[in-house]
Image (cartoon, rainbow, N blue to C red):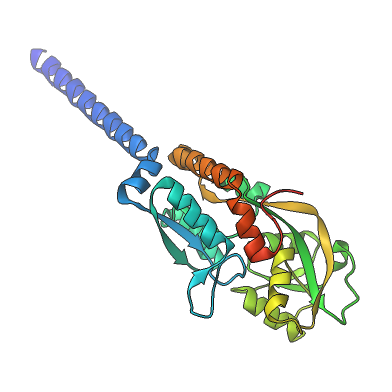
Length: 271
């Protein structure tokens, strides 16, 4: 009997130690996860994902240097956080997957806030606003309204806001890797239209004024552009710091200057 009680007592102690250890490990893990901002500031670097092929948001200039509105926005945020930026370029879907896996801290790439994305990611406050343009060849008069996209062939990066809008209006969407492929398909007559930011259309025309394209129609809705990051308590402090940084650079007029520099208009405010 005494031997049995002794075994029972020892088992209870062992269980208590295990549970205490698990609880302690979980607490340490949670503390680490909740302190992503401190982790970034400790290493002195924030990893920012972007495509690098979508002018004037993120692209390479004639010297092959990564530039664009979002590049400079990311640099301003990093300056406010007191860290440097590590830019990582890739295709759209890969960037979102990188956010999920923790390879990237944030994604700064003209990302529109949709209900579906907000369910999966946490977003900063909006830092840009734009309307969606339906872009067609100049001789195409079949599309005059958004509903005319039904049954038409369009092209966009899969899972992008623009692909989702095209599908919403029952267009058949061809997946592409970047903007250049999209316009190549359009100019070659292999698709009827493509959807993109209104400002992207005008930026494209700046370097190709003779391009045989036009805007067939514009969306009524104004898209809110913000910065996505992993969802939950793990990024709460980082999200708050980014919002503060965006507010400060906006109030200082820096976002307006960048907007006018890259777009010719101020897209940092919802007019």
